[in-house]
Length: 98
Length: 428
Image 1: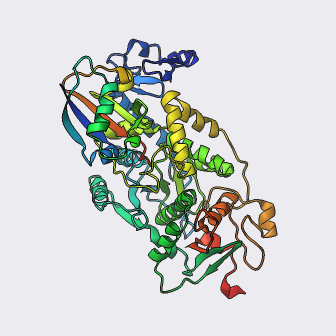
Image 2 (image 1 turned 45 degrees about the horizontal axis):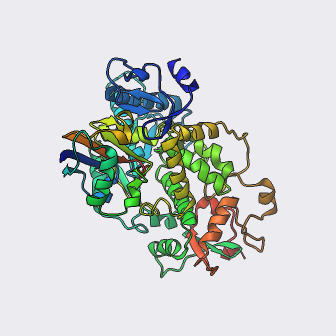
Image 3 (image 1 turned 120 degrees about the vertical axis):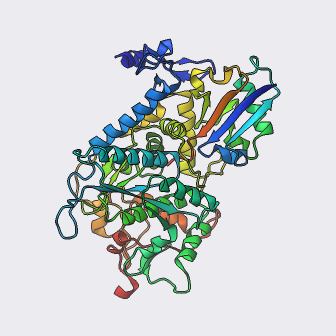
């Protein structure tokens, strides 16, 4: 199990029942499991509605930003980032813009 | 120079298969391309920054954008003919999205900084906020309005909420615009139906989401300009991403001629006696603004739109398709959105006396059609409608009752800019 802090912002919280932050114990192996494993787990266990608004294929829907410990996930390895205990992962939607 | 060298290098796939160009030479070492001392954590515009440099850079970029826009220059003449002497006043159109929330924060920061420098000429002497409440046609949790009020209150800036149905009250004579088949006319509305009833009929009766979105855009523009009529300028939070989406959507809808006008960072659609529309965030991408609002802990309020709950793969409207298309391209080909914006921004229109479409305030009217008194979707049988081709299509679509072809008349707000072109029932 790996304990993660998940945060949702910019409208992402709507897909997760209005939850802006949640600490979860994910049944994945720390150091071996990656973001590629986390996203489908979130879709299957946390998402309350409209999975197509969260994921597109293996990754998040275009327009959703992901920060891992306040760093852009593009610089942290994207889907291949290896999860560690107490990681904070933030999902920010830019699709409600204006 | 480092960025130029990086721009010349070919794009390569990263670990997840996305194509991206290597960033600046310093960035290849993983350090902030600005301070070069701290490891970079933010990747925007093909450069990488630490969080502190990203935030200060964003604020500095905004100050530069505002200094180039120079609100209040030249001074706008008042009704008495004299120029305002108390400094430029601004009205900010706030939608609750990350772009306009970021703009609110940056403008408030700018005003505060100018106040702390007693000898500086303030770029904005006063600021108020306008919010167009669309809950009359799009169901919305009332808590969102409370969050918006709390957000604006923390800056000490006055907030004015304008209901969408008040668009029917803008015409001084109290008339509305009726469109039926090829006929367009103004009429005194049925007193038994309220403005709210009329608004709901328009947006509930037609299956065309694209037409409803376009009409909503026009109504918003007119309401905002009316709300800001006594101000020097009207601030819109349009980002590079928003504007690039509009470029593609406008081209698809036959309104490509409007591109130079809505891309202009400053414009006066109602002439120099009306507020100047300014877009100081035109060179910021949605990603930059999304990150900025998160790091500054600003409350982004996700008010629903006509298509916000629709699946991305469903073709619900031209704007929806365009937004999904460009977002996907940007995810795999970073820089696409900026390229679309920068390329389209090179378009220029020569100065002209030809009037603008009175509905969208963006497209020029064809001179020959103005002279002949005919336009798309209109006849000269005593009633003349002067709107652009795109708006004519919108009015035509709004008359559809179902996808099998049933049609009916539609009653929309009559803006004064349209009224001057129309004969009314009383004129026959």
